Amino acid sequence: MKDTMSIVILAAGKGSRMKSPKAKVLHTVCGKAMLYHIIKTSREVSNDVSVVVAHQKDAVIEQMSRYFDDIHFITQDAQNFPGTGGAMKNITPKNERVLVLNGDMPLITAKALEGFMDKDSDIIMSIFNLENPDGYGRVIIENGEVLRIVEQKDASAHELRVTSVNAGIYAFSKSILEKFIPLLSNQNAQAEYYLTDVISLAKADGATILPLLVDEINFKGVNSKKDLADAEVILQERINTAWMNAGVIMQLPSTIYVEEGVVFEGECTVENGCRITGESRIIDTHIKAGSVIENSYIKESDIGPMAHIRPDSHIEQTHIGNFVEVKKSTLKGVKAGHLSYLGDSEIDEGTNIGAGTITCNYDGIKKYKTIIGKNVFIGSDSQLIAPLTIEDDVLIAAGTTVTSGKVEKGSLAINRTKLRTIKDFYYKFFGKK
Image 1: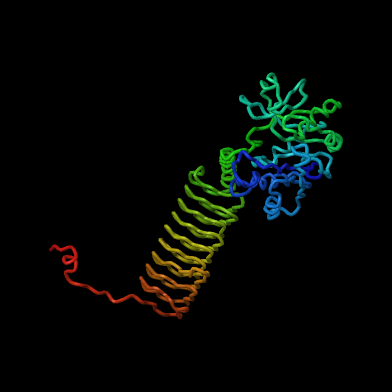
Image 2: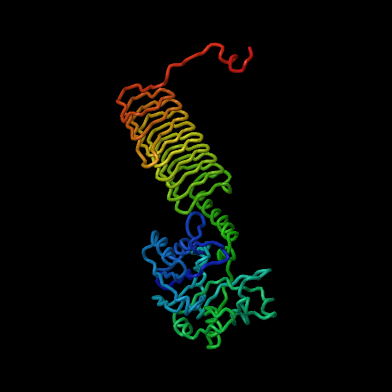
């Protein structure tokens, strides 16, 4: 099918109902822009994908170009040719069938799109039946064929009672678009060029137009922040289900957030309340309840509960316990049981990080690195002032602030002040005995 169908994604609109300065199609669902999900699905079924842009086009192109290098971006002349029909003015598809998608439908699946190839017709358009069709264009069907589409704002009272609505996806023969797009008029309530008018023009010319009943969930449009949240719930369930089917153990999966782009390998367990984002890669690892993993690599380790692994961390054969935060660090064969911050650091195998240990990596202007060797024991409540290198086989006494740039192999580092006891000070302070 890839070399028989071209896909055009309409992503030029502002999306004013989102009530946001951000372009509608750039709002994220499970960590990626809505438009990303649609392009990804489109590339599964077509070798010719075009995206029509206008509003914030530079931002849209820049973000999508991070992920796709084979997409055609076409700028709509929205001032002279507004509307969905105007968006198709400069399209030159290379395949004989053209599937037109909307940029606000992040739940579309490749399987759903394949349905447009199962019928032989000049035009195939998607429909679904709604008990309350308010807000949708109505599809007028007679004798099993589509007669015309009427936008709600242009519909008569009789047409408003129709429950068959336009799902917004069309498959055209290339010749139909070449013939009728130039004939579109903007003589309507919104003074826009409607792609839906191709239906009535083609019908009057004797073209065959067949409806395709589709699953509403797959073609759900996102027009508000509430729609965005609803779409994310659906997509998140799909993502989690796919990973569980691939062998990941998820405890209370409805409480687990896993973004598009996260990869699991081997035997992994994710407990309830976890959040895993970015391009994280999790291999043979147990992520315990309430932990957050951001854009990091974790292999053969256990994380949490209530741990926070911040971006660009690389962790292997390591135990990260309660309330430990790791940022932009490499840990291999390390134990950090609880209540520590390890930032901009490299820590080697056999090292134990005591509770309350922090790497002081920022002086208010620059970030500095802490390098810790093998078999280092760091006592509780220690502060490691970067830039700092601690060589192998070192003991850092509890409560020590390490300020020198280097602690040599085999050393003990300690700088606690001597304990001073003042007899009966309690009674003097509170004035009683």
